[in-house]
Length: 392
Ligand SMILES: [Mg+2]
Image (tube, rainbow, N blue to C red; front, side, top):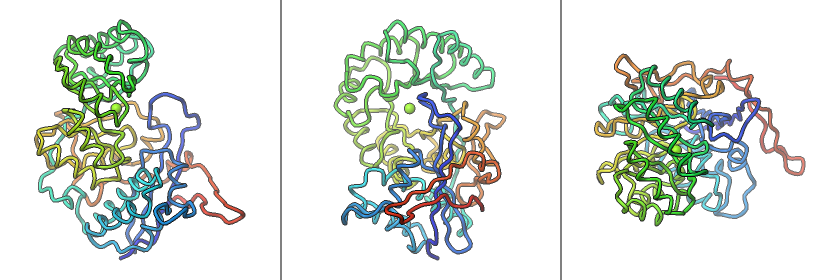
């Protein structure tokens, strides 16, 4: 079969704020080949990503991603590898190419899974789909009291691992940060895993290391993204201070090599990959294999729908020793509406990927129409893109 169509849907909440909440809008991808349909999601700016798919060619290494995907054969996993190689070669100078291709690539895996009647994790070569322990992933609240209440509520819901991030952390004084971390720890209790995500607050400033003993004193399991994503030297220096807390990062990687650099040069102990940014499932799988061979723990990154959550778990589904998974618990209604089914914790509090074909998620077309934005992009009167009809 060949790829007949790639359709892109820009979905948005009515109001989008500056909060570090990636579930406020979404770019959903539908891939069609013959009688099969696959769905994927980009973790990216929707409109610029649409542009990367349909933009006029600037030169041979700056072609729209559509040139590498449409009408290509899709019969096995090797075809996805070949298409990804075409995107790299033809869209090298198109920075948004990785983001748009991430959702397309996931949709191709989903579609191939439908055709071959196999879950994606099985197509990747895994024979077992191990349960993961979800950590609730939430933003720091504006006040320490509210952070305490959020932590206590999550514990009440049964979560034994929680990550707080972004908000004002790292953007005020050490004392203010400590109040927040103290509140989180206090709300969770001493026996839960607590992680802190600085959301790149420190840029490249390794003096932020002054916060590490404070985090260690509250038994924080990892400090995530203290620096901008490619500040490998800053990561390395902070990692080598060895003050009893490990570093995590990698969600901003838009190539496999960036994540590998963060492991090899940056000294992170936890490598976090978002399939909706790095180019899809295959590069995330490669990072997971390399992490496994280096004794580094692979963790998914996701802060959007359960379609994205399922995608993010496939690359390490078969790695028993990599047992944590990011699990967003405060998604916007749009993100929850994207799928009819959701990956809910079982009676042991663990998450399981579906054994059904592809990504195992059913896109909820009816519920999404209220979030769909109608877009038309034209150049000199020639229409390059109009919002497609949202149907199965
Ligand atoms: Mg993060």
